[in-house]
Length: 168
Image 1 (cartoon, one colour):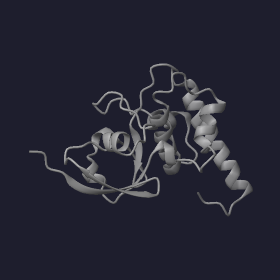
Image 2 (cartoon, rainbow, N blue to C red):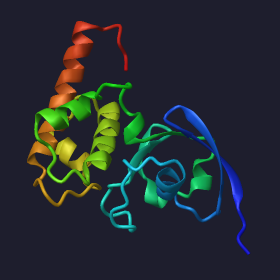
Image 3 (cartoon, one colour):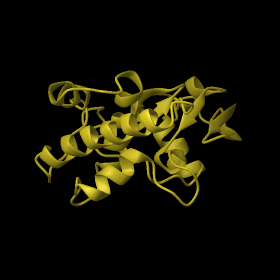
Image 4 (cartoon, rainbow, N blue to C red):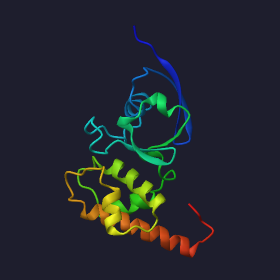
C-alpha cells in the first residue's frame, strides 16, 4: 500500500500543492511532478552537483532533500533564477566566457555560483574554486567556469558602484 502526503512547494515564486510519497526526492518532484527539467539528475549520490538548487536561499543538492522537507520553503531552480526573458549575470557570464561544453553540469554550477556570490560578492579565484568543489564538470576543466564566476562578480560589483540604490 502506497501512502502519500500533501506538500506545498514554493518554487520560483509559485506555490504547487502535490501529493507525493514521503520518500520522494526533491529533484524528482521538481522534474517529474513540476516539469522543471533544468535541475539535472547526474549521479544519485550527491557527488556531482548537477541537481543544485536554492532552498531558502542556500545552495543544496536536491537529490539529498526529500520533497516533504521542502514543504513551504522557498525554492529557486535554474528556471526561476533570471527575470523572464533575460539572463542572470552569472548565466550571462557563462555564455560570454564559454563556460560550458555539453551543458549537463551548467544549471547546477550556475546555482552554486550564484549562492557563492550572494555570500561572497567579491571572491578570489581560490574562493571560487573552493565554493564550486561540490559540482563536477567532465568537459571544461573548470578554467572558463571560474573565469565566468569572477567576471559575474565584477559585473555585479560595477553595477552596484554605478547604482548604489540596487542591493540585490
